[in-house]
Image 1: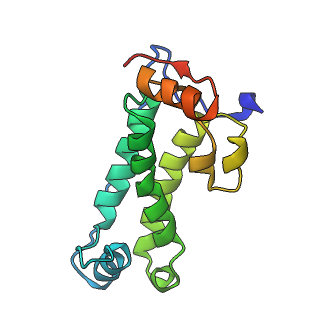
Image 2: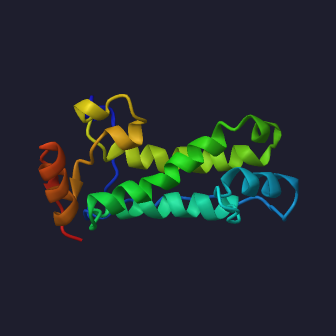
Length: 161
């Protein structure tokens, strides 16, 4: 199964660059307004912009591909971006907007890159969680690798950034 995964590292050992299409013109119109409403916090915080959320998930993926160098708590918090994107991508009200297809395409590309650096088998007691949370990375920085070992008893290869 591993041989079916796309290569995430260039021959020099660095993450491969990906070609990103520029976001479509999204003024503070109806889609952006609804997107913000869907992503707004429970205490009246202003919601996120589509391009900002896409960029944030891409940055999390890039950090992971480079060997995420922070704690398990920070890693879990950063994966929160993907949880929120999942809610957006599945929100019934947003399905009618064509702009959502751009968000979906960008998330799919980042997901492809992220999945390629995850291990095939999920953490047993997290197997019912979404794939991005249930599968540990193949490699990480020293702190995250140590946290996976301490919390889950899972060896994650250390990659210094």
